[in-house]
Image (tube, rainbow, N blue to C red; front, top):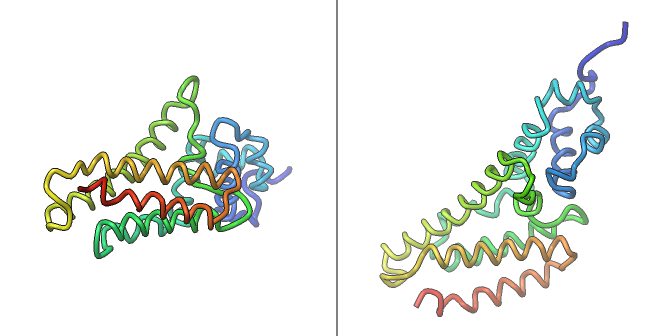
Length: 200
């Protein structure tokens, strides 16, 4: 009788990394189970036994991305000496992360997001929540800067945070389309040139 279940050589983390690459390049909706099983070196029953469902696999792949390829982008925002340095550092770290390898490029959390119409609502909500939490991280840092006197009272912290998050999302799309690190860092310089007018 043939053996069932995962192969003995199954490396869960390596399989997850391979799934992450497929979702990152193809998005949740466009990544087929055939592509995923081939990339991960698993038969469909083994994939389901290990990860439960495509949706759960995707969630774990996004977590893995946040801990590895996407890690470090947000880490220094709370501890940077000033809010300006926090945001400039986040954007520069994004430019470096988005152009680290040949493929995939850009931010998985931005690029793997499906269109809302006809898409898996749980996946849409998961990615939206992650993007909104990143805006909230920036907003909290800006609010702290106001409280500490770095920024003037009346600064629209939410609008400023949303602006720089939008710049970052655009950088992700540019990276996917082949923009170089030099180009993305130039975008960062342009965005930061608006700092004084945004917080005055």
